Structure formats: structure tokens, C-alpha cells
Image 1: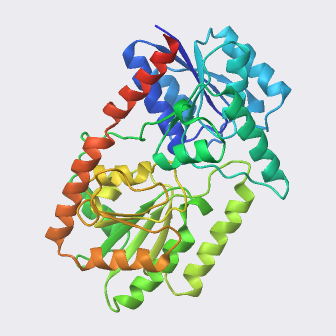
Image 2 (image 1 turned 135 degrees about the vertical axis):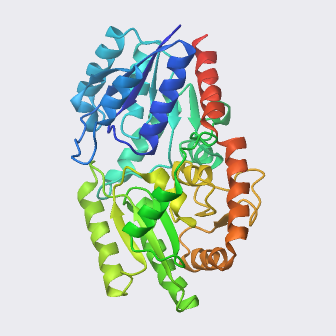
Image 3 (image 1 turned 90 degrees about the vertical axis):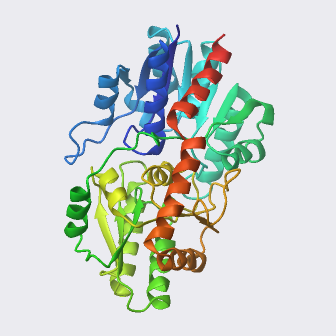
Length: 394
């Protein structure tokens, strides 16, 4: 069995880190040993345990390299290489944009396969020309050092091939997944409790959006769409619950300003009764089960875990086409996919879903659940991920 190393520059409970954890659990279940080299954590008072503590309980060995929060440089490469050598790594898989170049440089130095999980489309921050410089360095390292890039969707694969000029044969697609079939059971009583908490009456529709507050998630598009829904359905009782908040990281201050703009828009357009920013919650399965419609407004993604979780909850879902349209997805049957950054299209799909009967929405939710169980069940996707890595180790 192998010693599988992973890197996370910013360990937290968001998508890329969740997938690193799920894939690590799959490696452990297969008999491999897994360790994580990570950057500093921001401890939240709202969480019972940190992400790294959760990994330790899973059986991961964890090592802190504080410099992983910084840009790539000789110090972080040397320290990460020392730890990977000490831990007798057979491979080192990068999962986040900041740590992927480090993992690839270390893998080359230790003569390990350069395996990367490309979890998202890439945005490089900073004032011009810093983003261009960052992209140049990232692209060159990926192009030169990558053995296999495992991409979360065809859109991400296309970016790696066309933007970073990596040969297509050095990439493949493994969709992100969650536990669809074993989605947590939630009682009717808990669902009623949640709806009461948000002041939702029996005849009021509960819409939900889950994800961190970030320009990537398109909350300005969502807020404009909700304004338009209210215009198209005057007098209709509904409320959208947005679950999430700003996370720690190098772009936190800009993201806080972005959140302020969203809050200002909601107040200035009198949306307080229709748009509730609920912050972080630890009862997302209950919220999804209690809701009537899921609405996802992201401008770019790798492949959204939030949408798949909504499908697992049998919740009829509307999403943007930011990460493409999956093969065999049927518009209107499995949900709705609309153009990204288009508030009008998002609003009209939401109005159409809201205009359906409860039974029609239930049918869409069931069809979406079956689709997700077929293509995004974590037992299937993690097995494929493990097999791909094992092929390169062998």
C-alpha cells in the first residue's frame, strides 16, 4: 500500500477541501495511508472542530507548514519537500490553486508523479500586472511538471488544456460527488422548525442558496434575479435563504467589501422580506429538506457540491451553466440550467419552477436525485479517483 500525500494551503470546510477529505477517506478505505501538508487554519467559534481536527479523526496524519499561505518560493518548497520526504510520500496531490505549484515542484524534486486535482476554474488576484505574472508562473509549472490533472468537469479540463496549454492526454474528468443515495434523513418536525425559524408561512415558498460569499458565487446576479421574480410574481409569498459567509484567505478584505455591496443592494431595493442572508449554518441537510427550490447563481465553478447536495435532498434545482451541462442532463426534467451572469434568465427559470405545483416540483426533484445518484455518487467518483492515482503509482 502507498503513502498518499495531499496539500491544502487554506484548509476549511469549503468544496475543494471537502473533496480532498472524501478522496482521502477513499484511499484509507482501500488500505493506503494518507497525510496532509497544510497551511494555517482560521479557527471559527461557530464550529465544534477545525477541518484539520476532522481529518485527524478520519485517520489522516497532518503537518502544518505555515509558509503554504504565502506565494510559491524557495522556503515553502524546501519545507514541504522536507516533510514529504520525512513522511515517505509515494505521491503528493495538490488541491488548491496556491498549493498546486508547490506540490508539483516537490513531486519533481522527489521523483514522484505530478498529480493534481483541479477543483475549480482559476482566478488570479492582485493589481495589474500581478495577476498576469501569477498566471504565467502557474501555467508554466503546470505545463512542465504535471503528470496527470484530474479535473472536476469538462469546463475545467478545457481551461487546463486551452488556457494553460497542457496536452489533453495528461488530463481527465472525475466529477465531484457527495453521498447522494445516503443523504441524511430529516424529520418533518425538523423541517417545520427551520421554516418557523425563518418566519415562513405554510403557503410561502422557501428558496435556498448555499455557498461562501464570494464574487465567484454570483450573489449580485441572484439578488437581481430575486428582484425580478418579485416583479413577475407580484403578491407571491416566497423567501430565499442564502447560507454562507466570507471565509478567511488572502482576498478576504475584497470579499468583505463585496458582501457589503450585496447587503446594500438588498436594503436599497427593499428585499429584506424576500432575501435572508443567514450566515454559516451546521444544519444544511435540514435546510435543503425543508426548502422548495434550490437556486445556484455562480459565475464559475469546478463542479458544484452544493447543487449535487440539493439533488441528493431531492430538491428541484436551478443552476447556471458556469461549469457546463452534464452529458444526459435533460432541461426541465432534471432541473433547469440557465446562462451565467444573466439575472433575467435566472429569474424566469425561478418563476417557472415556482409556478409548478408541489407534485410537479417533487417529480423534478426525484429525477434530479436519480441523475445525481447515477453520475455524482461519491462511492463511484472516489473509486475512479483512487484508481487513477493507483495507476500512476504502479
